[in-house]
Length: 269
Image 1 (cartoon, one colour):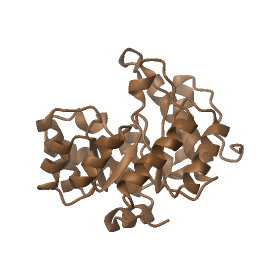
Image 2 (cartoon, rainbow, N blue to C red):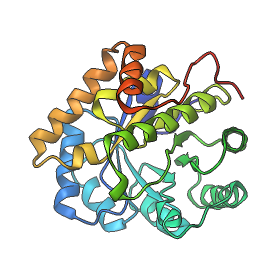
Image 3 (cartoon, rainbow, N blue to C red):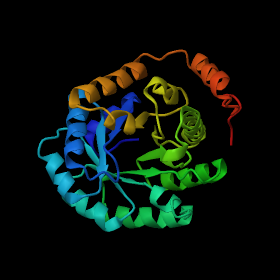
């Protein structure tokens, strides 16, 4: 695997990528700027932003790290790449889930082909929809590999804000880890785990085959740039100094009644 963006390629080779998500639907410019500054100051790998050409141009005026735009709109993606975006992500399916619409692999493949035609050699990340079963996820990932997609991102189950508690967040993480493991062991494409990640668990996805992680609310909820930088640095520290993974899973299982079996030796497709 070799990405066209040299900075990103070096980050993915280390398999400890930190993607900071400013908020795919976030139009709060002051907050986006704070997150962007924190991302750069902390030395995170890249910043994920809304596919908005004004935001792209603003951030490119002072950012030296790669920026990624996320959308499912080919025209928005094309315009953002023309404005300086370094890579694109096809994802952000929550808007569909809220309307009980579930996009199919065939629809996504057609979308990927259209976007590749529009943007040429720019690096592309594709999110695997969580509503697909594991067989479907792996088959879809293999189709993406055939199309020379550069990065895959896993997705946990969608849930509304009212249901967000530690138990549901942990379950969300476990489901994303399950996808991370089976996908990373069936294709030769780097996998980003980005689904409600908590800082204390940031080293775990690396154990299950992830090349990196994506973080959003845990960073955006901080009040200032300094706190955001501290948060990102703590995440990087956890990723660079792996804890006892098995002990962490035992803790989650006992305290949150999660009976999902994620034994690495049993996860096969």
